[in-house]
Image (tube, rainbow, N blue to C red):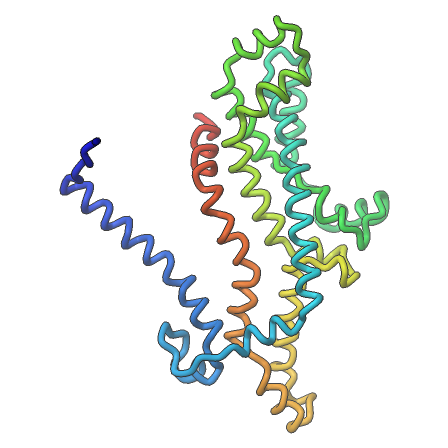
Length: 298
């Protein structure tokens, strides 16, 4: 039996400090959960508190009241996140492999073109005109998927290949008769798993949290992603609160009985963050390894 190593005084203090820091980081999320189950009367009297005077499911009932549309929006968001991440990883990993090959004559020219995209942008208006006019992606689900390649992610993947895939391994594959495609898919791509997991997780979060593209391009309810739906729910709450004078007093009082304010916002936030929080622990080890081993070296 292996003996357990005892922690020294310094390691014990460091462990305690890190545990305390982790708890401090978790407290805001715990507060959001508690507030989402608190009544508005409790929030108005005590503010945001871990120990509300009254519990309530009004916020979750209000968000859940969107029913079918909420399920559809979840499905749309999951679809664009999965497809957008997979397509992005395929394109970026192949581009990164091309840039990592020193024998490729156009390598420097492609690297310059890639870096230009990091410094200059056509702007939102020109992007909108091109994608809706030239490509006809107005109210198309592909408008949320296709324009999503990051130069920084390509640099991370390229550096990972250069640092962790030996040139001798690639040369031996060529000696055995493997072409570039076979070398990439059977040798390089399987060795890129840590970097692909870290970059893929960052890209998935970016797609999941993006509502601006949907706001610009999507008009159909059956193509509305979750983030845009939740933005509209919050705006509905703000509109009713700010336009009290335009609504009859009796009708407004009846609305406010079922309309959550701060608790509703917290429920909306948890609805959007929940799946990402659940998925993160499964990607954490790959995320750390991929970012450290694929980091740009000075």
